[in-house]
Image (cartoon, rainbow over all chains, first blue to last red; front, side, top):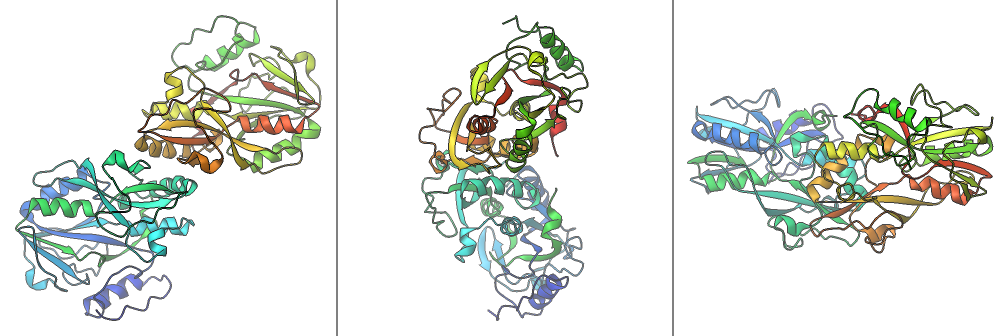
Length: 269
Length: 269
């Protein structure tokens, strides 16, 4: 892993500069903290034969799968997200799945590119977390430098063709007044998971032990906090694992697609 | 008490017709269910010497004391709420407090009217409850035909002169998804108490037993529900009791000021 980029305060070139550094092989790690203020997205590249079904899966499950970009078949560009974006080179590290199994973790996928590949970029919680923190809502996992706690629920997503599976949620412990404020703030951001899907009472959605998450770090709940659950971008990854497409390329977790879209521009209000 | 008015479906004249019936002495009871769709308000009439302090108390505590109308001294009209409204005759039943003690419950206060009296009308939760029910959020106390549960919290309101006291909250038990929806819906209505002030964990705000409310009926919580707390219009009544003004005239609980303002027009979004 190369040394992390030095990140100045938010500026108009920081997203493009980050993509350039990644494209040139100068940044291979996580993108958290890079290009402050700009939307980062989850990536999923599928052959055309799966693309329509996956688009339908996203359309039917907008809270876990908020689609913010979709390419034309074979076109590695997504100009609506960034004019210079080349999805084959601009992600620090990829994961290549064949028949649902992890096959490789390349840092460039130009040699794998095909005319039938369709790229999907999904919004991620980084955007709404920035809005929460900007409003003074403290996030435990950010303060601790850990990953947010994630849980597999007993809630079925709406299937589409080969794609189906349980809803995965992320959970942030908040004191009651901040939980209410967090509902208000994240309701403004439907393209990055939006409002919580559940609050309090984890057992009602099939979560037995909050301190034993399915992924991420234990949340370290305090007695004056309630658990607040948001739909999580890991949900479509599980749906893809179950669908076992012949080929699927994703970003490596934490190494996201950096766009030129401002987080604040996603707010519907 | 006269027979309740027959209430047709919402129509443009129903608020004015209700006021006419009250003014003519043909309706003396509760106003719940009358003039469907129109804002009903809490009433507080104070001598001028207390009016500035009470206006400041409302301004400093907008969640429990959302001011939707304030008259000129001595003027019994509030034309912004309804052109024909006469605050001396248009409330089914009043309460007259002298030095903080209940003195009378007249149905007309024309003989008590003075040139120095100022009327305050505060928004009430009827308006946001209508918005919740219109969106399919079921309210237990409405279904049971009971009064909402109210609790005195350990939260101090912001004092203003003689007026101070603890925040009173109303509580509605909701399943988690509807609790989230209720935060969204009531956030649109800041003039009728707005978003909840607390959710879950009643002990954090000094409530020991949810089934033993300070006022109203027991809430009959179910295991799949969480308690959602809103600031309550009883808060200023307690502040007034403590201030012991020489004269104060309020509505009798449940017998509200009926306005020509549509509930939906209070939505800020």
